[in-house]
Amino acid sequence: MAKDDIPRLSHLDRPEKLEDLLKQDRDDDCLSCRIVGGGAFLGLAGYSYLSGQQQLQAQKAAILASKSRFGMRSRSAAITGLSLGLAYLGLYRLFK
Image (cartoon, rainbow, N blue to C red):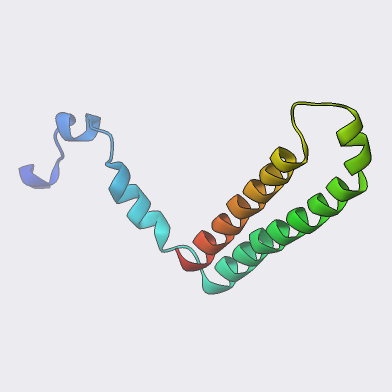
C-alpha cells in the first residue's frame, strides 16, 4: 500500500456533509413509490376535508350551544388548513 492510500485521522474524524448524504439518498425513490405515497397523502387530504366538514355540520347545533371561543369558522379553518397541509405533502411527494 502506498502512503497516499491511507486516510488521515483528521479526515476520518469529520462528519459527512448533510447535503452529500441527502444527494445519495435521493436516488432511491422509484416512480411507483412516489405515486403511491403522493396518492395516499392526497387521498387522506380529501378524506379529512370531506369527513371533517360533514362532521362539523352534523355537530353545528352543539358547537353553537356550547358558547366555545372556537366557533364554526375557526374549526372549519383548522380542518381546511390540515387538509391543505396534507395535500401539499402529497404534491411534494409526487414531484420532489
